[in-house]
Length: 87
Image (cartoon, rainbow, N blue to C red; front, side, top):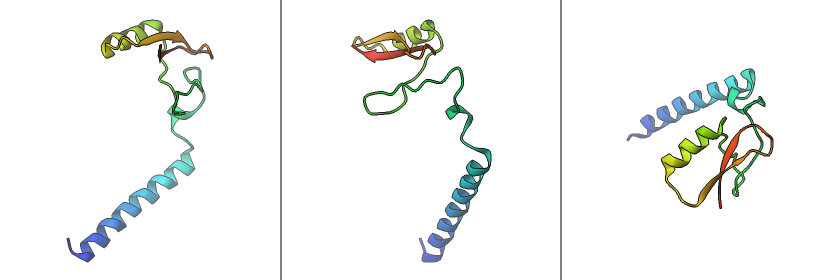
C-alpha cells in the first residue's frame, strides 16, 4: 500500500469515527444502556453486565442450549428477571 493510500484510508476512518462520536453526543447513549424495566445493574466476576432473561423459561431455554452442567438459574436481586450463574 502506498503512503498516500494509507493516509486516505486513515482519513476515512477518522471521519467515520468523528461522525459517530458526534451522533452519540447529540443523541445520548444507545437505548439499550438507558435504565428501564428490563435493565439491572448486576455484574459478573469480571465486572461486565450480566445477561438478563425476562422469564425463567427464557433462562431455562438458554441453559438447555448451552448444555453446561455447572450453571444454574437464579432470580435477579433487582427483581427484573433471571440470571445464569456458576454453581
